[in-house]
Length: 109
Image 1 (cartoon, rainbow, N blue to C red):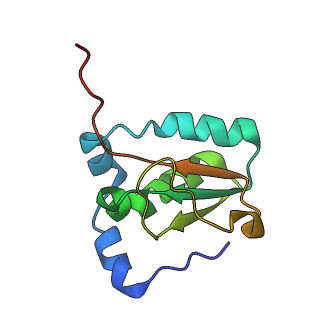
Image 2 (tube, helix red, strand yellow):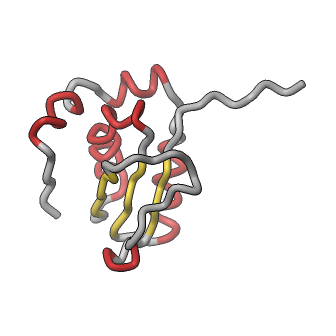
């Protein structure tokens, strides 16, 4: 699948590396790779909250390197949590949706 990037967004996306991402967040990308392989997904939609969107293309590059012949789509609309699924996914024939978040877990009391 050909990658298509919005020209005004690509500049901000290309500034960040997967190394920088891993220093700030644990997105459990190895678990994502495992899930993609187990489900045999061929088209995967990735959803990121606003704070993680600058890393989106780095995540795709990492996943492409680990998953082989899988196509990835980045959802660029808003994402307010797990209940915020894009409408009309069935038309795109998405095999798997992966939603990322960046909040820390609440401490145990």
